[in-house]
Length: 120
Image 1 (tube, one colour):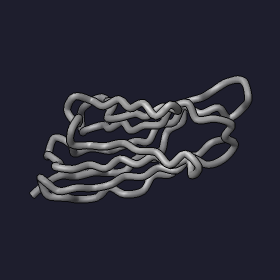
Image 2 (cartoon, helix red, strand yellow):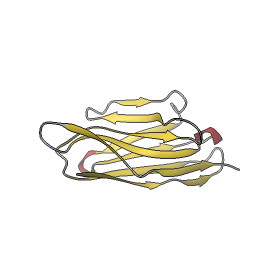
Image 3 (cartoon, rainbow, N blue to C red):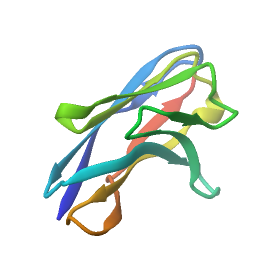
Image 4 (cartoon, rainbow, N blue to C red):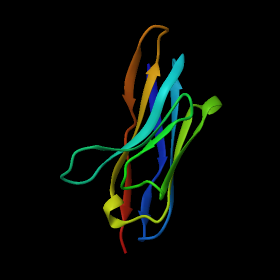
C-alpha cells in the first residue's frame, strides 16, 4: 500500500506565500505523476498543478505564474510553492499520486488534505 503524507499550509495574508510538501511512502515501483488538487467550501475539487515522471508540469490557469510545483524524485516528494496568494486560493489542498504499487498496474492515491486560508 502507498501513503501520501502532506505538510505545510496554514493562515496567510493576501499577497503572502506558503509551501506545501507531500511525501509518498510504502510499496512504490514507479511514480507516474504527482500533483495537487484543492477544494473550496461548497465547490468541487479542482486541479491545481501536476508533474509527471518526465518532469513535465501542468497548472490551472488561475495559479499559473504564481504557484510552482517541483519534485524530489529520490525522496518521492512533491512541493507546491504558492506565491502572491489570493483569498480565492483558500481551500483544502490534497496531494495526489498516480503510482505503481505493483509491477503491472498503477493506482491513484490521495493525501489527507492541508488547509490553506488566505485572509487579512
